[in-house]
Length: 384
Ligand code: COS
Image (cartoon, rainbow, N blue to C red):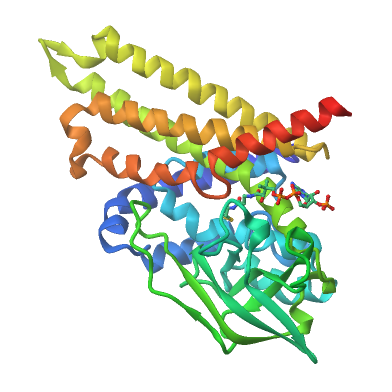
């Protein structure tokens, strides 16, 4: 749903210009320094990028899913590390508070998240609990008016930058699966919480992940999300479902960028006396990529519209994440192929994108988890 086309277009133009004029020129610097320059972060905050999805009463822009997707299609036109910095705050890090938080929790945290003053991070994955998220072992044991949290969370995006974590921990050790999991809002400064060293990753330099370690971390009971135990896994699933459409839109944006770069290179690069774009085997790679990008774009916009209509989009969200992330991987591979030897050399940029996009098929639910969700929903629906 698009509420006001003119207002949205103005936002899209602003984001597009920001991407072209500020982010694209900084891609190489971010990659080599592993840092997003402070002035770019400040501009992101000023533009309202941290508050895209939060309601206006908390200072956000209250974008609908379709509007959010349109913005992410623009944001995808540059290194995904930039999106990652505000992505956990507009998505999985803050939405749990918005969906299931108490009015006090929302009032306390959402305005500071929307302004970018606080960065939110989502702490679900553990060393032994990734795809099988319900098996998580981090414990939160009630002791008077606090919960004592112990455990380690792994690969947590933006952990070094985060001001707060939406933490999933087990409050009921006697319930092994999803029902024993609760969600907490944990401020980064809480004693007993520490951050591990920044992970060395294959790509997406500038976006940081790290362990989050809880050692007898005493979290006030008022920080239990929604004030109810046993709801944390459902909160996590709801948040991830929306996140899958968001990530799928980024996949489409980045695929468009890589394809554009490959096309421009193919038009300029000459072999056998003519631009390589004139060769039909190169054209096949361009055309297959264009068709797949178009399909993924149409899927993502359709799923977003359905979600805005209030329909159940569990299947569609997983279809989008599965198809768009796999498509992005194929486009990255073809783009490198079209660049030829230059595709393997860092100076041309496409090698960096090739590494960056590999993550899309892994995080916020692997492709195999999306397949599992889709098939389970199909079987459930068929059984009635
Ligand atoms: N929205 C709301 N509730 C949901 C939901 C959704 N999209 N998906 C599941 N739930 C609920 C279920 O309805 C169920 O509640 P009831 O017990 O009341 O029926 C509960 O959550 C448990 O669901 P389920 O039985 O499906 O849990 P499983 O342990 O079988 O796990 C998968 C399901 C594998 C799909 C889940 O663990 C998953 O998504 N894993 C991947 C996690 C992930 O994306 N990790 C990435 C790292 S975080 S960036």
